[in-house]
Figure 1: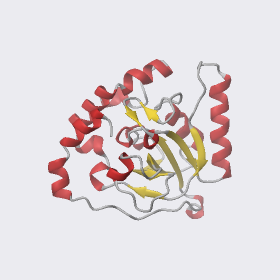
Figure 2: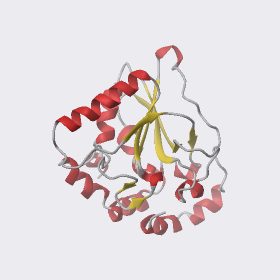
Figure 3: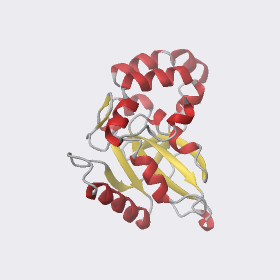
Figure 4: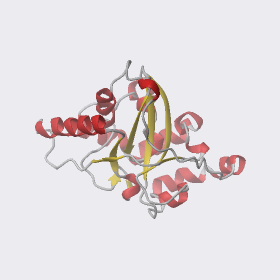
Length: 218
């Protein structure tokens, strides 16, 4: 856990006392959407507190949930993932209506809310638990994800290579309840962490504009 997140985490002690440290340990394995009415997208973009807001208000997004993806330990805790011992990445799971929003549109939002040039780190947070990744759920998603990365590479925007992984989604473990919608439950602490971590400053350097949704949040 970075020094900045340790500072923020101190403020969670009283909350953790109230809610306990019970896990939402219901592993969810990717599967076909019921009758094609909904679909799932899973992304890792560093601190998962910061990856819900860009997606949750999009038309066609039905729900967002933060958790842990891509690791080898069953039912990991936040403390275990933060220690970098489980192989998981902090992630956001998005349930959406593909008739209203496309996977390609979600990919565009994802890219513009991460730094795709830094391996095993995002902003002030370091370790493979903060790596960036697209966890695809089917072959179509894989193809679209790889195509979106190629487009970025072909623009010659970046001097460094894009290091974001594109890998098959396995089990997704929802994070503990006090991490869900953290930006709503702890708005001041969330904004302080985001500022101290330099997330928006770096995103502006990488993409030339403010990240998705930030104008509306201010």
